Length: 280
Length: 280
Image (cartoon, each protein chain N blue to C red):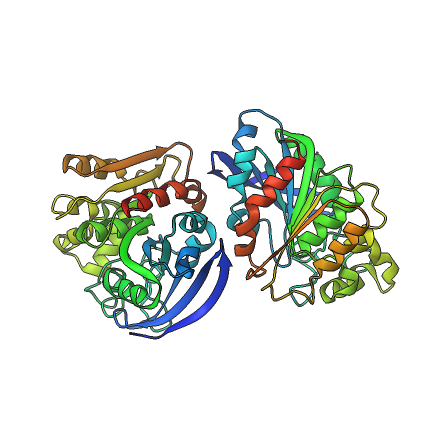
């Protein structure tokens, strides 16, 4: 197991907020992540882990600093893990624009150059990072996952393909149908190539129809979100999920936008949703 | 009354988080501030206002994004106002280092050059800003005030000199005796000149002994704060306050540092303290 380098540590709600760096075998570069250990974990209880996947341009710090999630993670006794949104570094491929390259990994395994060697966020999030977390911290092997925008896409497609690994999935303003919307089409054609058949394995709306298990789903969407509905079409996803027999809650939030202020406003209900799915 | 320019607006906890810019007659430059209007204010009720003064290097955004205070402001029905920590701009005097000049106004009226014409944060916070807020927003004339570090110094010295204008004062890790500690000595000698007699009007520990009213005081201090005790000596202040008959609560918080994670951990108790003083 790769060594972890502690970058910072702050006491928060009687738990511990930390940042770590480690060399990832999957992405073949140094990766940074944040973890919040609730007081129950510091007292020696093995707590479940809730993974947060951030949106375009974010690092591990946006959710850590702005969501207020740790108050409720402490209350419920859940560890939070906030990975970065892509590999990063001077030697890592990048592109002009905020929606491709560093900060925009889209939680997939790239097959095309120049992305393929490092842009393997799907394997990193599904396999390497949980193995590391469960080896190095006082946590159980119970997991749940959520995210925002591009990270909502990540959480949904990962959970739908791995229902045995997660108790539930939730998302704020997720990209649910990237094969059909501009951000997704730009990223998928670059990372996965021009054959859109290969894109479907990362499209949550497509995945609903072949999912081997039906974990509970919660989605919040603000109706004042400037990316809604062009990039974000939750209604299609929700309709398909219901037709496929999923237990899905969908909450349209009047007046809320795409920012972390929207996330902060409803983070308590998402943590409670995962706590219940985790049996807390 | 000067015109307000709306910079941004986000729905937050069913209230409204906004940033404004306006020309200040006091500082003779454009100033930026943030305001959180709780749902009660949006429904037409005149709510009291709690002023937050930030620490060195901060703008109006640090507390707005990181504290989580709006959750409790919404719960209690209190408007929050977050001013900037100094005048700013290309034409405004500045200095090397984070602890003097822009981002480090120390909530005083400078008498020395090159600071005197613009660095008048005391008058701005005590007079111009509340008059503006009470004219332009659905708020009452009930006020309370709190802050962090340099902003804790600002809140305490302002409240102690104007007990009729504020219901209570609280602070996280405040500079309480700037005449005797390095940040304060550097700033006061630059802004106020070499005669340290003129400094005492801005030293909270000095002001306790001449205060015309005794408003309730709450102070939190982390014992893992890297600026404690060299810059921060709350015990001296607390002892003097008790000797002078003030109702002061002082909470030493084991393991907490100087960051916004410390503030977020206890923000709920500070908002409740002000709510009670405001008669809510």
